[in-house]
Amino acid sequence: MSKDLKDYLSQKGVATSRTTPYHSTGNSQVERYNGIVWKSVKLALKSHNLPDIHWDLVLPDVLHSLRSLLCTSTNTTPHERFFTFQRRSTHGNSLPSWLMTPGTVLLRWFVRSSKNDPLVDQVELLDCNPTYATIRYSDRRESMVSVRDLARCPDTSTIQGTYLKEPGQNHLTPVVPNVEDQTASVQEETAAEEVQHLNCENDTPCETRKSTYISKPPIRYGWD
Image (cartoon, rainbow, N blue to C red; front, side):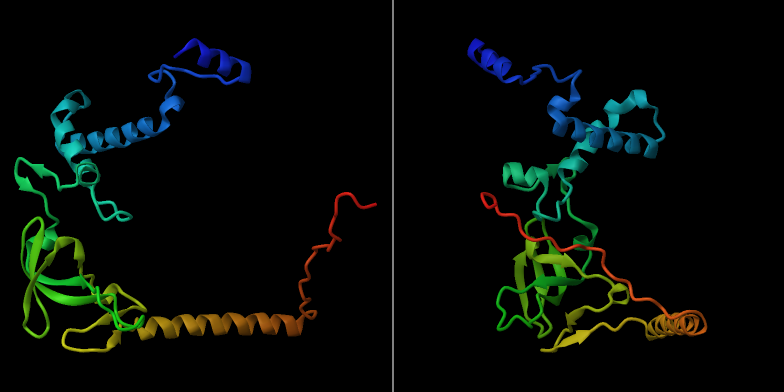
């Protein structure tokens, strides 16, 4: 740090520290990530039934897991954001389990005629590698797409109030939630409203709640 900068900071009353090991607030983002790394190390040690003194044995696997963790906001991993290619391990490229087994997946639509068209389409996954996947459409056409455009197909029994495009159809099919649960909730709300209404009739009338806000005239500077 130059003398001019030191004098400037001293005149402005700015306190600085060039040592971060004993002042974690000076480098808070790094210290926060160190906490994440140590929590992951503790979890790996507990999974292998090892004491804390053997943290160096699980550290490579922990760092690989953190660098390969997919970020939902950017749809990339930290390693891919930094090096622009997917991370490789000693066992090859890492892929999620739903891409390793054939089945139904969601494919992103790029061409939509209107805003009411679905954003994704259900296709059948045939084969996959770390970059591309072979899929089959509902009309039995096969094509190769990027893995970035695929997503795991959730269980329709857990989806409520959403619309999916069924294979072989051009319209949206709503996934209706459980009717019995809806009926029970409506009955409970109706019963609560009836009890509140009876209480208001038997006792004193329910008073309307009024706001206590007081309107004030605007203050204009320079006016008497």
